[in-house]
Image 1 (cartoon, rainbow, N blue to C red):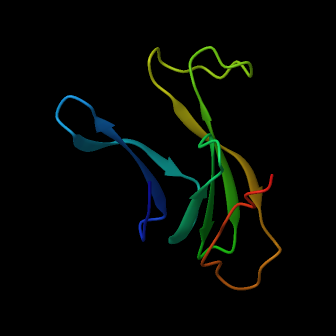
Image 2 (image 1 turned 60 degrees about the vertical axis):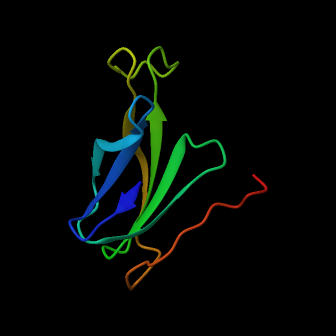
Length: 101
């Protein structure tokens, strides 16, 4: 995954046949530069922080997920499940998950 000046996060996947990487999703919700991101230890949640002073939590949904989120067969979809705002008065530049939880 990559954070960007264009206010997005890009998700990438390696093609096992040719070892080439391609962008499989663009996550859009931040209103300014995304400075940092971090996956939780399961790889199913992603935290992002931005110049817009927010922290966002994203979740990966796969086909047949118990939440009923529609996902194309053999694919996955990332959705923003939480936005934390009002806690910072300046841009947020870094994020990390606690590895104990």
